[in-house]
Image (cartoon, rainbow, N blue to C red):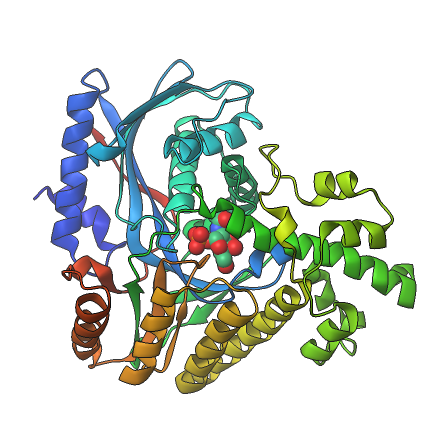
Length: 472
Ligand code: NG1
């Protein structure tokens, strides 16, 4: 194995160094075969993440607590003198994408992996009209549609590669905003958690991220007491595909709730109590008002679903205006199935109580009270299921089994509707846990053959960056 590669990877991966070195070696070889004219190459990586707690809080300006994974996107690239991006995926089923960088880059059809590359290129060309292209080979080891943020790792990975090849120097903390906004290009109204942790992650730490403005605190992990283990439900929840509406319904419901709450609070307490996102409720002046989150939500939102007409009426605007203002996405499309209504009471209750749980977990991590931390994870899961309605039978089964096994904590992680659960498992009992899940979930419940890639003990890695450079 190439000593230079192994040496560069040592500071990044704490496990499976040999197989990582093999992976990078194979990527370099593919790059050389694909672009024989390119003599010098650069290798960048961007990690996926697992969110320990704080689900669907980020786009509301409320905190999250993710950590990086050693599952990541690796890119071998060389600059081009023109504006073409040629990207070959190591995984043949994804194929090659080529496009020209210009002021407005047209999208591929919804769901195409190339849109994540275009998302970064569009975000950067908005800043640098002279952005040049690249030849690259990309390989991802984050399982897709599993709530471990393969999409943002791809956006961040492509973004930092293009940026560095173009000698653009933007501090990472600024890039967070650029790539979070940039990813909306694919038509999902997400928050900034994934891009932030992929960029700013740290080895052996979780991050508590606050938003608007982004603030990061590094939080201790229970390294010598518990392992963080993710289990893939194998239910694929691809946000760029048909889950798009379901995901967007959640974030747009919060926008509607915010608009109503803003008017209600201003009517009751005056202009000073205006809000522009739910996270504004962090301000000291709201402290008393939101002390009891359930009372607060029940005071301002009825329990039944709201229809867009009722909301427009309350806001004193036309229904069409409300649809345009609150239910239209960045790509110009309108949220599907808006007739189904919006349960604002439940959505707000989840977001506000989840915020409390994240703060609780920060305290428990500081105090080393991991059993309490785990309890909050279970509570978070219940709220995701009952109030945010993002669980599914497979995730319920996995969390139920984890509880039966005796996991300190377990919950769905990421956007929901499928994907993975995250579990806090006592050190020393990991292989028992894996065997238990293998038998009870994959064999008995899903009736499928088990593949070791379905369950992963999580190991943190540093945030996105340059891995190494090489020359013929
Ligand atoms: P994943 O799990 O990667 O689909 C999505 C959003 C996050 C956050 C979570 C829910 C994107 C890129 N990611 O994550 O910002 O809102 O859902 O907590 O939109």
